[in-house]
Image 1 (tube, rainbow, N blue to C red):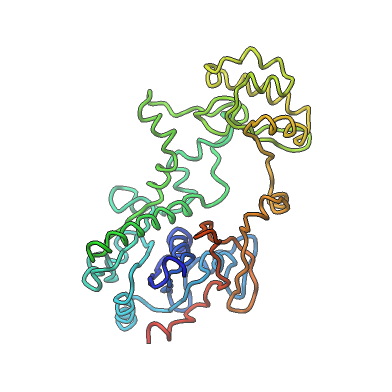
Image 2 (tube, rainbow, N blue to C red):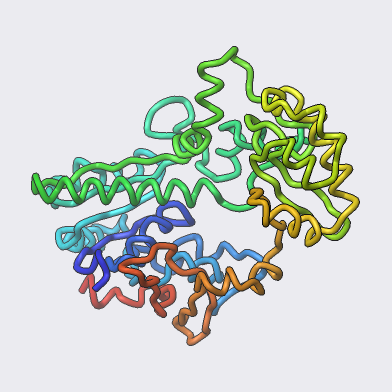
Length: 376
């Protein structure tokens, strides 16, 4: 038995953050029912990445909406809206990521749903919260990364701002919503009442930066400056970073400089052996390291550093990663079946329960495939 079996979730969300939360609940055993617009559906169905589609939909849709049902309903149609309200009376959780005010105008705001079902946990995702001048801004991952300062933390000092190469905030915000929903469900066990759980991309972005942002709030008002060489964390001293070798790249984390000088046969590092200069002279230290590491191959350096318990790793791309024994041992990939029979290899739920991985071979639903089951 999966831990959330018997829990019913109504998912009104589109694209990534809201559906990501519903996906994780589905992974853990909840029955998740997507409510989609007839003929159009979740806009993620048309968000094609890498030119990959499954039938009429994007591959992305089927990976982030696997193991869900789909009902088609026009929420502006009074009859359809009443059917959806009846469905909500049977549910434990609902999730949406419409802009503030949209669900209220439809008649499915928090106050409305409390009257429909006092026990329901109501989860809402926005870009910037529900008040203030940014409420109407589009809540999109890249835009929030840019507004939040995140893009100024990656890349070297003289580089332009560098965003994360994937939808990091959508994923994180979705997971924050799951945390809030689970807390509200636990409270409901004691009180019998549901609750309103609200998350937003900007708050998630700020929370993700808590280490450096806290230093900023308690400092001189200046943002942490990126290292000019091999920057990986604007607040961490040398050798923390990624370095080029003759045949690839190696990452080195927190390590005593004197130890590196010995293991790398690099006496040029010895003047920096005092731990107190690892931050103040990090660029000078990193330049010496960069020049030394470029003279050898990744495997040679790993064979010196790993036996000495130095925190280091090769920098792999995906073709290299999936060939490693470590990746194989994680059992990180599952295969799901799309409605047209296409078999899709994708990631699994990253959580293990009772020592077992959590998988399901059910792919994303065809638009409205379950309307008759849940709304008629």
